[in-house]
Image (cartoon, rainbow, N blue to C red; front, side, top):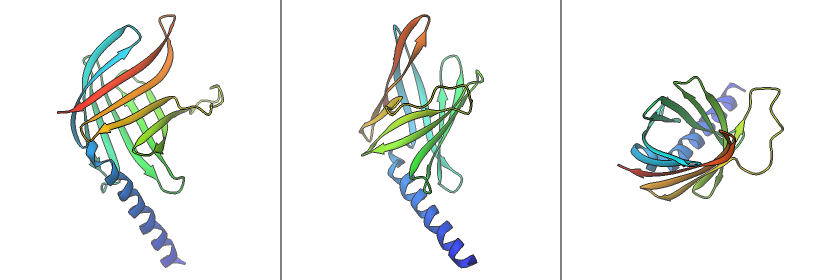
Length: 156
């Protein structure tokens, strides 16, 4: 029984390492341009591996705040997860579904007062090349208007 458990753990770890390896193009520093409604700006983000190369750590350097995200693959559930926090006290949990070399993001809630999840994704991460990706979404209310985030990131 103990040996079977160890084999399952090793298989899960190998699958996690394979998935993280598929995202290794992200490692390093990126310059990003973004628009949200009528406002726009730029920021840098850096990716590194950590915790036995089973997770990606993404560090954001926005002009007015800092943020970090941990990205990993859950082999039991067969999807990616992303945990985001920033220096303004915000936090998000995101379930990421692979669609080829892209991901769709679904924000998940820890709160019982959130509306039920819808089937459509909240945002889409699109790998354009090993040196460029885009993020379209999420959409939300800001200053009385419905806005959608758009990000274009290029490797530095």
